[in-house]
Length: 111
Image 1 (cartoon, rainbow, N blue to C red):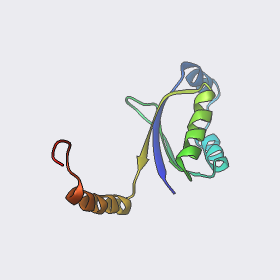
Image 2 (image 1 turned 90 degrees about the vertical axis):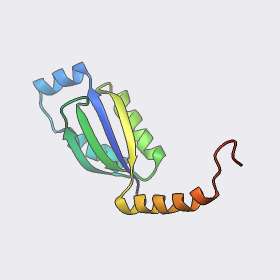
Image 3 (image 1 turned 30 degrees about the horizontal axis):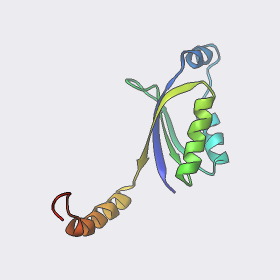
């Protein structure tokens, strides 16, 4: 199943709410991921440019997009940035496939 890494920001209202009533957002995200047919692998509160990072396994881009849209529509998060992650074995396969393509691909103007 594809793995997606998402980083994002909490809105000001979400931060105020979590200060007033702290909660473990991993639990809510885990339930939502399961409902989308996926699985939460990791949830982290982070320092720096983003407030949080999640690692989620989802069955397809459509299901992951649905999960992201649901989170964004809640009004509690913003600036979501999601990256598809490959395992090292999948990466090795991509490099091998690229090797096959490189031999036949011609750059524009060099056909």
